[in-house]
Length: 297
Image (cartoon, rainbow, N blue to C red):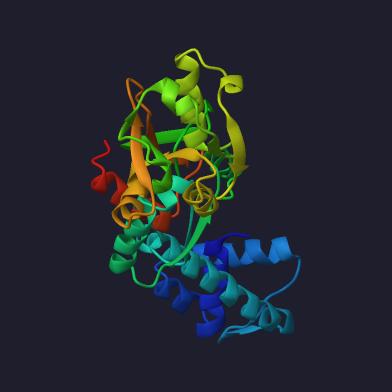
């Protein structure tokens, strides 16, 4: 059965006339008769009692009428929903972010988006860059903001900004504003977990300098930024974090900030999407806002 047959059936049932039904839905009477005949043949049951004066539903026809009306209403509702789909920015936006962007640019981005769409709810998932990318691949998350990438055809990335990494230490250690690499290596090092983009950037740069992990005095690994900072504040060791995260601690006198001479610790912050996935209107609106904010082509 098709929608034209069902519409013809509903019109005849309501008007009790083939000719009136034909005029109502702008079809010829033979076409209406053909639709009803085909429908009865397909269902293998008589839907109307026909006489010279009017057409009445059979008991089976009365039973089918409710279903027929529901079918047409469902179709119309689906069409209306899809027609407005691209403009229907609603629901919950699931956003994955690695530690640095989650604690720097994500709050302002979410606040700006919320101001424009105040009814949107957010689920912000802070994980390592590798875990976020896997969530994007597995369709558990629509948009991610990460500090490192791996090569995968399912991931499409957009560079948002460059991020500089700096050395942080307890003020009690009295480190100079600029360290030589040899001076830096004399201290115990506290690093994030191996999946962390900050750690990967640090280790890649050290490797470029001819230093393997064995030459770094790693005393502690932590999987939480706040915990790392608390350990550094005690003077247990020094660490590397994003410049964006340092300023407030430096202004309050809680941490000292240093650079390493002739060592450029920089990486990019990326917005990542699944290249095989069509974004929901809400995720698409957030993506477009990020493109405008960071001048992404």
